[in-house]
Length: 120
Image (cartoon, rainbow, N blue to C red; front, side, top):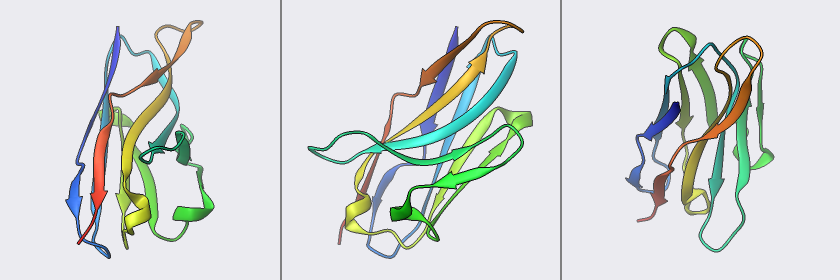
């Protein structure tokens, strides 16, 4: 059993900042790539940022220069620092991870989501 639990969402004014966290727990052998996705109201889920096990990162064009993904492998945690937030960033943010539960078996896992609302 593996769980991903997000935290850190909330209401913020335009131009403000939030930091999301996602902690993985359970029968974890190794965590591979981790990512953040988001689903704006009435729209499809979209990829925000990814980070590999060695720290290589990629970002959606819409968040480049404003968001930073990072991870703490000792804590099995991935973060998303969001700066200069815009109303268009309003969405439910989901954590995603590829996790090995032993040396040969891996699965893809999702968190439950955390709401981020950018509004004055």
